[in-house]
Amino acid sequence: MLINQHPKRLLQYLGKNKLNDSRPFGFGNTSRRFPLYVSKKEKGKIAKDRFAFEQDQQGNDCTKTCKGGDFVVQERDFFGNKIGNPTVYDVKTGNAKLTDAQEKRKRQLGRDRYKIVRY
Image (cartoon, rainbow, N blue to C red):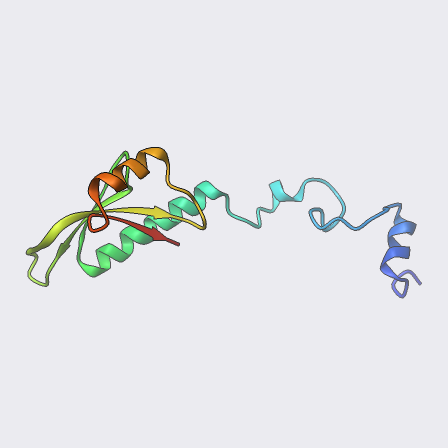
């Protein structure tokens, strides 16, 4: 009998006045119990790990820095010899903006030695 009812009528019968997308079952805080999304901090960590893995697959030396850019990458050829100068790579996710320190370092190093990778 209730199954064939219109969804709005069913909600009125259950005492709910509207359907809320954030609480699909209509009870409690389901986002804490069932995390369906990844936080921004975790997305950044995943992107950094992915970048380091890709550089390792290409045979480059990838060293993590603590300030400014995220990684310093030294390209290497098939025999392990260095190619060119080390490059600072900054890994960002989405539309994340550069901080003031990163902008300053970008101006200091120039376009060739400071690159931004977005995931």
